[in-house]
Image 1 (cartoon, rainbow, N blue to C red):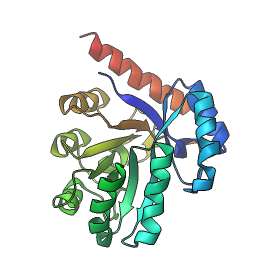
Image 2: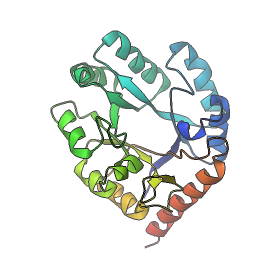
Image 3: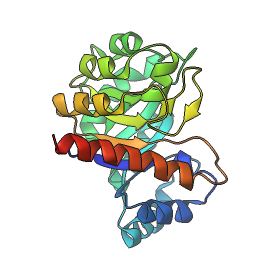
Length: 240
């Protein structure tokens, strides 16, 4: 199994952007999904940000989570920023009024939208709700599946992978315990090996980023343990 494994920079929110990029490199990860708190979508920051990423050998593959509206004056600049940064996917929380505009923008810019399921009470909490939102729209409008948030609403991330085949554009890899609390990946309810196999079965090509929300002041030990577990599962699978 070969996945483009990275990290959601929200996991490193206790660091500034330059530190977060350096830590990503130190973790031997080549990909980064950047959250707007680290890098606002300002085209004036593009040159500096790209230079910093290049210095550390990191590709900024995704960006978000961003709020998308049907106002082109607000939404188009996000796509312009994404194209200039070489971003493949915007993980997003789009308003229902935005989809006709998004149909046009994903085609124009070649940037996918991954609707981020955000847990109980959110407008895109479960798989069926997202399927209904995207079914009549451009296939580049799909899902960025957050495994932890999906488990919190009582749905199986493995079943979700198969259900979303063809529209799964990204993954936020996260684990939770039976009470829905974030934990180190591999110590909670997520069947990591089964999830990775499901991704391989559907030919998943998008970014898979670890999102670790615990200990923002000192997240590295938990992030490292999570990555070690995932990488061990990948090695075990390859050795079968």
